[in-house]
Amino acid sequence: MDTSDSLGRKWLEQQRARKPLDHKLRSVIHQTVRACIEFCVFPVILAYHRWMRLNRSWPDGSYFTSGLASGADNMKRLPEGYEPHVHHGHISWIDATAQAALSIDRLLDMASVLGRSAELVPEQEELSRICKWFGERAWDDTLGMPTDVDRHGKPTGVKQVGSFWAMLAGLTDRQQVERMAAHLDESRIFPPHSPCAKSRRRPVRLLLQGFLLEWFRVGFHQLDGPQGLGTLRHG
Image (cartoon, rainbow, N blue to C red; front, side):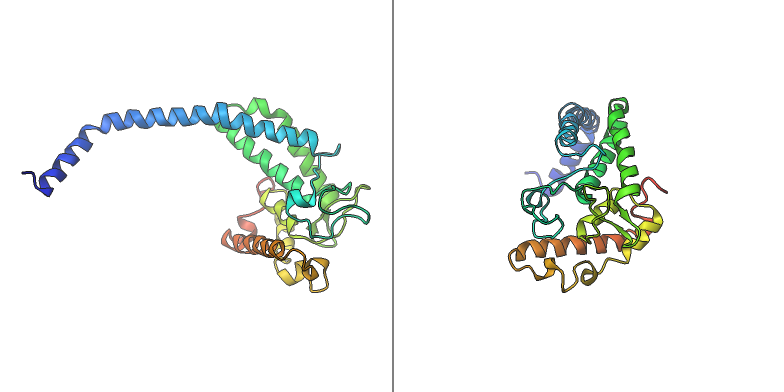
């Protein structure tokens, strides 16, 4: 009868004998996954981004969304007269626009690996427009952070956690990151007198917003502040 030691040795011998097969198998798996990403995943993500650009962006390249779509339906960020849950308020949303920039950045990375960068010239041009819009329209130098932009092209001046998406998207330079870092204090982003802090209609939403703010705060410090975050295109 085989002992556990002899069975173990047989198993090891079998594994050694299968090494060439495993190498070939790994190569097949790698090629299969790459083909799946290139022909099934990448085109779908790219098509979704282009649909968003066609249906959720303004002529200046900025994006809009709604309160329910963004999870920010309890924030007082829209002008008076607009329904905050389903209307875009005729403003450029800083979080939606920054997310679009982040989407392009990741798509460009994928295209580079797949050797398909030439197909994303429209996205490269779009990213340049968003970066220009951010610097000329969204950044509020008085507040030291970006905000939504109204229909007249002026920052709304409403502080909100969605502004920090600009850091993740690399739209901010080093100095802007440092100024935004000063706001990583929940009491300053949502002061006691703010409509967001007083709202009792959406306690779960407030909890999620607090979690998102904490996620930005902890991630910022783990990445060594301005040295590791928000300088993707500015160095």
